[in-house]
Image 1 (cartoon, rainbow, N blue to C red):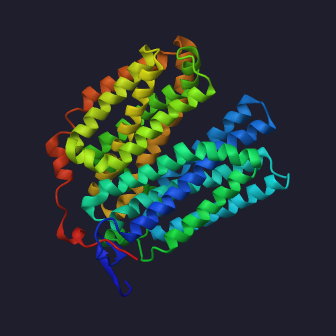
Image 2: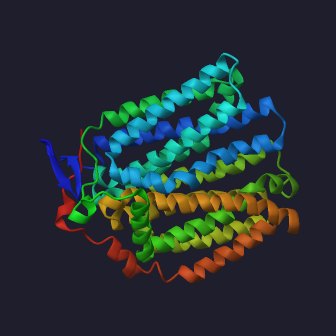
Image 3: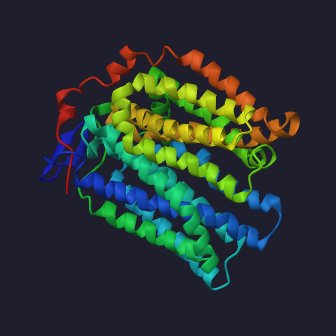
Length: 435
């Protein structure tokens, strides 16, 4: 290790005597928030660009498939990279690669040479990078902020991403696309470039350091992936949370996949009203992110999880049974609030319970399970609605939510969660780094 560095929880990091979340976190938060804005612009602009070139539903839908495929292919290997390499430098490299890819796409579109095939290729590269970037940033967070501030840090990260990706990127992406089809992708490239600069300004070494001779031996990627899976499988709280997220993502994505039909047929909403339903989710998410650490401290992590399960069931019941826009809008707002709190608890528990050398792999395994649930749910929603009617996905979601609530209610008991929040060994209580 170089001068000015110390071992904190088996990670080489720069010393920090700062209080609160610190300058390092502010830079990491700003980088993450800018990236979320850029990714949101691309999410909005990609289908608009494809639709401007073709009216083939299969070609248009393929944009979503290309965006999700990397999560299934590279989530697990991405976690290995996050544990093998300096996480800060890895994030910088990923951002720079994405800048080049998006700059090529924007230039091609602006000069009239861009096509759907190039868009798909760039989306694949960008989303592959997003997987590794997210695993590395989540693994890096426990060394950036003190352990007792993880809830607040995760809340601010989630709130920034929700605000930018779910609230601002939509109208801004549409406006930029109306000006020029290549503009959203060009701005996306700029956000990734700024993100790389902010991460580079953090300084320090954020490599996971092997703590014993076995960990220092050369190992295959497959073996390292299995180590992450085995650790997750033997951690009851983390294993249960990952399975819950996967299952509930199936039913949630199934519900959202046909929400546009429900909004039109049962709620009698037009395109603006349909968009406002997602705004309800986003507003709840931002509120939950901003107040999350205080709400969780007041309610306790145990009841945050349990009440969240009930809100999941209530959302599906409202969507299945209600024809009131107000009721559905409130249910979606409550879901957004719950989702933010759940993400804070889930990420904080994982970061507290996972050794530094496994942070990337355990985070990426959780992302893999969540992505798998999204992929299955998108298909399931359409099949259920087509076969049994528009409300079928919501009734199925209600049954699943009640079932998993009953099955996991005792897993997240006060004693088990309290052990996860217990004070760490003294070596892990060293201060976090600042610039």
